[in-house]
Length: 410
Image (cartoon, rainbow, N blue to C red; front, side, top):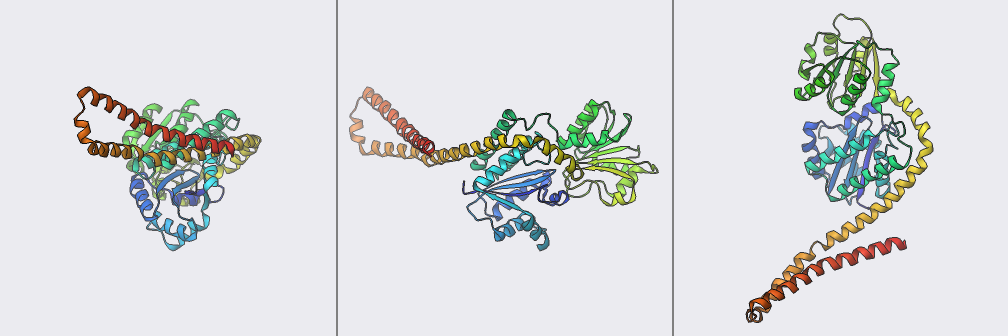
């Protein structure tokens, strides 16, 4: 447990717009995470980025102090200035050992979420691990930690009412939209076809909205969502040329810069002076802030949903004690899993050693073996194979039994 560290930026400690500084675009994820792992001297690395948090889980024996953080963020973004690096160092929340695992369990169980009880985070945790594993920056310890994290979150959702009548950032945004009494024939532009926008689109379709135009960096993905909505699909590059007008924009992309620039918005709105609605669930925001100064826009964004999220937390606080008990039990369980895994890794050399002993024995007793008949050799081989198998399995079982006995004694 001493090697598990977490560096976190969340809605509780960092302005949501600033969290966007830590987002990595999909196309750059592999190169940047591999560079970070190498240059920060990490054994393993896990990266999670959502609309209201960025989390780094590290497997390292290093002490995560100010010097370490400066080295870490210098490697995280080679274009950052000393001012950027100091911002990250001053805003980072650092957890290690039990606290790191407790934080991760709280995240996946949505206890630490902007919207307590929303289940989307567990999928985001799993998907983030899959990407890090495919890239090759996550290893065995992170694999076990994420597996136990998902199991813990499922325990919390199953055995408490934390997720009863669940809500999410998407559902809160939709609720705010309906408060505006939007007409069912409203024209929607949807920018991005990822999980968040797809979920929002399902809400809209379910409630009888029907006029959709989808833009996405990859046209094929835009077409999938547009077909489901019976709308039209275009590549994102065509957004600046779209002249059919709109009433509502729903946007959530992984872009590092604003997707809807003042120039693009001016082109989209044309001569229409009516008030528009923009639902911007991206971090950093897809809508350039300058637009709000020059146009009549009702903006629904992650950061202005926080008050509603606080009300949601108050309604669920009575469940937190039960959640914490489940989490503490799973922390103890994970410690045991790690100990068992260490034994398995330590014992992984035993088969090679036993085979090597058998090979040497065959050489030492070569003359005696050559004098045996075929049947005797077959019997001897069976005996040796049986003993080889037992020499591997018996010590492993004994070591695990000792660990379990020690755990129960404590």
